[in-house]
Length: 141
Image (cartoon, rainbow, N blue to C red; front, side, top):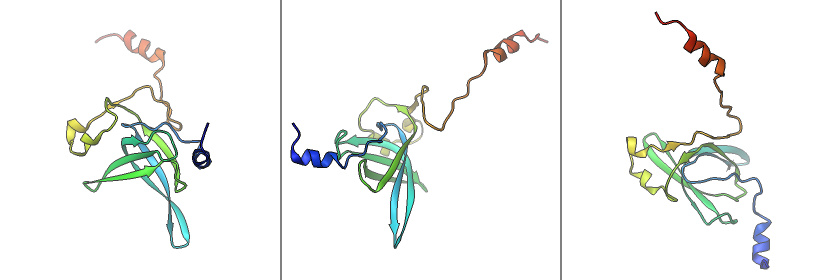
């Protein structure tokens, strides 16, 4: 049975939150208020950590490098300020927290890309089998 506090917090939880894991590259669309105007600001980077589970207080730590300087931001997933979160790339990682990437440079900072990825808006083109057969049938000179 849920307590009154848990029921209250559930009413603020978003329903359309994508599955975000460490190693994913995400674009976080955040509402920014400047004076009386409101606009959307996009922060794109690598997810270093996911904390506090899937509850209303769940957060993700996103890191990007801007002008040679590392910038990290912590986003509460269910905040009304967050408009949407898009997963643009997925990588295979073996850790829950990727804090070691803060100091990693070059090859050490490279993550393994996941091939079978279904991202909305990105279509993976396949080479037809005919082209492979035509290539192998060409006479050698």
